[in-house]
Figure 1: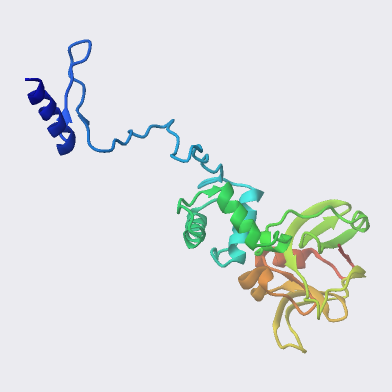
Figure 2: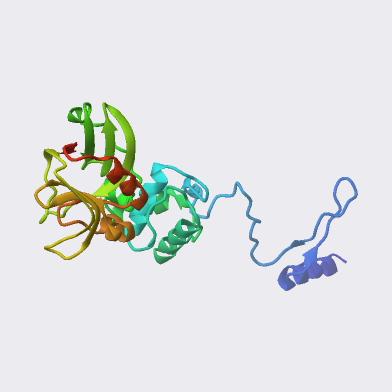
Length: 267
């Protein structure tokens, strides 16, 4: 009888069958598969075979719906590596989600579309800190504080730092608008000037381009509306003029500015 029991036990061990037992409360627990090697069922607190705990999941920094300057910087950096074609908006929208997914997939990271610490570190190593014009390539940057020379009289107060124009009367801001300037080869002059000529339908005699609502303040340099600025933003430049992208705002400004009004261009 003992031999028969021993033989039966050996047969069970070799064939990999299941064995059942009755618990202390008389209930049969779920079957447990037995075999030559047993692998413990992994749990949330299990430790890998090398004895080291699993690395914690990377921290999520920003995701769909988030807004702010940090998101704007993320979008500008994604634009630098050609994963985001649209200009930064400061809102983590669908194009941003898709751009993050593409960047992650290209580098073997989980394609979550969520910006976590690992993705951010990889992106910052491949890009440079965006300049203001990259963060606001089509305008919208908050205007800089007015230069002290803008605080008296009627002044076109033009900041190269924030790329904005304030129309000021007796120290008060009447309106603001986005502007752009000349390139390094055709720089916009800085200093204090005055409007000496206005031309509603002006056309450049040098470049043969339209310069609507032109208000000349220094030689051939003027404040005027630019269709190129409206279309390309800060990815282009003027030939030295102060370009305005909002046609409605420059039209209203043109109607208010008089010959002799001051123009201040400063950093």
